[in-house]
Length: 224
Length: 249
Ligand SMILES: Nc1ncnc2c1ncn2[C@@H]1O[C@H](COP(=O)(O)OP(=O)(O)O)[C@@H](O)[C@H]1O
Ligand SMILES: [Mg+2]
Image 1: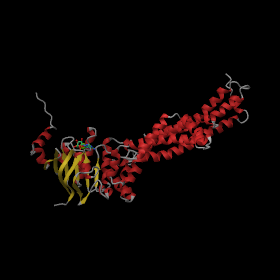
Image 2: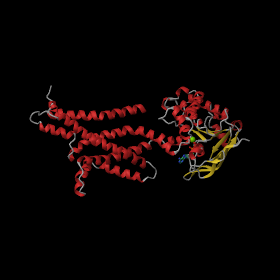
Image 3: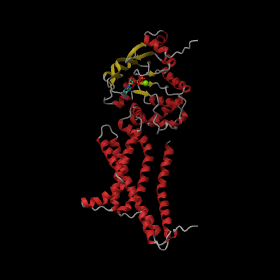
Image 4: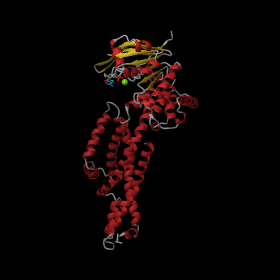
């Protein structure tokens, strides 16, 4: 069996440090996801209404987010604002702001699309039964929209978790950074550590995202 | 003479500058079944949609037992409960079971007691042969079953009048009868109904009065006997001929 350099994991606190790094990545993405989901629902519902200014706001916001590489936004938020405005944002705060801006735009668009995908005649059918407009929205439109929304929202959250690997570039020590540090520190003693450590990182990411995709599949099957 | 449950006076409906209904007047009296026939695109669906104010109107008025129903009127949800509507594609709510579909409006909008409505719903479901489907989801039902549920759902709101818009047009032929039999049963029990259909033998059996709609207005209004055996207008003859098949040998 080839030497995968797995033994470095058991040296000192290495394995715990990787877990701590994973937790940093998850913390950034989950806080951002929570903000994005709440703000995105609000934005999406508002943008879904007829003749709403929020429709234009959402469209412009999305255009910017789609064009800009996330790395540029991270640099802008972390390095740019400290120069220009004298803000002293921590790396983690900058990351959460950028991810929330990204997530809110995408989530808003998903919500708007999901609400819009419920056929008009479903609303009419509910109105014809004499339900009041708020009841129609809460009992007929939203439950059907949520069923379409949840798999897409989960997909967004997993993409966020993966994208946290970028935040090492603004000095946040997350799982990938810890992995590099461990490999660097053991370059002499275990030259093969790179494979074993990155493999561990891979498995950790997988285990973090897997429950989300499983849940999504389960819900899709349940609602089919 | 029984009072008019539905009274449409001088109704005009336009989409942009296309006039679909022009100065149309029509009454449906208590216990009466009126069937509307006419070529496709002549405004039959639009007429029904105006009656429960799913469309705004450009002229005239529509009254249910004397009370005006308007797209922009106040008490619109309350007025709509006086009008039951059954759609061509059933429009059951896919995320709710059969019984939840039926109970939703009586319990949430009319604030009636759940147990009481449930008992009524189960009795009606039994009458249409779907008692054991109460806890199924719409997607587990056939088209004919869905449409019978939609009829029960409309009935449970206790409307003054029921509207049917080509309710068998989306069904496979072998399911048409089970739905039409339910509607004939309602006519026998004296429900007030306005029905749009392309099923001519059903129209003849169920109708107290037949109305031919064409060119934005009512072209002919007569008893079913008269309409099918001695149509008064050329258009009615043409329309009826369109349902006959002939082969020259
Ligand atoms: N929402 C709408 N916008 C514009 N035109 C419409 C709309 N709904 C129906 N129409 C037009 O009104 C006419 C009557 O349609 P409809 O009432 O559906 O006819 P029918 O049910 O008799 O087949 C048709 O010419 C149709 O194109
Ligand atoms: Mg039609």
